[in-house]
Image (tube, rainbow, N blue to C red):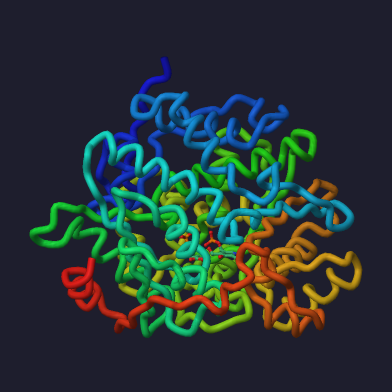
Length: 462
Ligand SMILES: Cc1ncc(COP(=O)(O)O)c(C=O)c1O
Ligand SMILES: N[C@@H](CCOP(=O)(O)O)C(=O)O
């Protein structure tokens, strides 16, 4: 029998089990949970043909051992991926010489977030039904996590969702995929601030654990929650299998560093991942840390790839923990500097380790639009602006590498119709099930960028 795994916080708390790490999401000390040891995954996960749900259940099984048995996990995975528009769930298609698009946008809300959230929603429900408990999901979104989380939880008897997005800084389609859901357990809040403000407010409340006098604890649904990144590692393994078993380079358009960390997690489990390229827009904190070793948050600026307008990348903390030889005190000191705005500086050894695994490219809006246009004129394919950042970066990072490169195609182009139309002269169509999205009524409140205001809202409305 597989032993039950143990999870530690990057900032010091030790010995959580899978259930605690999942239901809590953010540790009480403000750190992120990581497995004490990465299990070695069987090579079949990236070499053998297998259905997507089976690959997902087998990847997750060692992490959930002792809490969720394999048949239950397999059942959740089967249901999680049944509603995707493509039978393969995450097909891989050729772009041009050596570059392959890993298509992550065939789920119900048209972005890669569905891959993890359709599963995490079911895991939450399973754990809470066993305990006969309810939770309040607190999330921050720059556009795509919100819709995927709401879709995954809207029918749950155990969950309410409070989702914060930066007002006016997500596309109309992204916003409407959240705000047109009319369900008593769903609360959309448009915050006067940036995504970083939303994430800070959410983390402040998550650390408190619950509202005074409320029996429902908070839970995290962002990639703060380890199950998110574990579930996201599955599609990299699936794609490596589709390309013949590896090795591959991976290029990830990045913001909160969850998707890139998922590629790193796949490598930690043994998958043949070569270099990982971080593709940023003008919000280039991750590019700067890879090239200089200095991780210094700035004010987020608005770009044509809005879901990546992020300056404090949650999951970078998990990598800092590894770069610091899994020393929680050193990680907590470094992250205190990030939390108070000073940032952190890696030692030469830490920086060399980071640069040994990751490379990075910064792509501005003009190059994003030009890449969208050029991919369309050369191949007839329509990609979204985030994917365009990834394509532009992969071409620069891995030009003469000779190793196949996977580019994470993170969203459907119809989520960003104006930018796509500016580039290629035609509007990308939404799938027919969403044809009336722009006519549906919206349900959303506004809020200042203040954690106390969020707590007050929740006391009154949730
Ligand atoms: C379409 C899209 N691409 C890329 C990203 C960046 O991914 P991550 O935050 O995991 O780095 C996001 C947001 O997460 C997104 O919504
Ligand atoms: N781009 C994301 C930001 C949140 O990322 P997460 O992976 O930590 O949930 C979004 O679309 O909301």
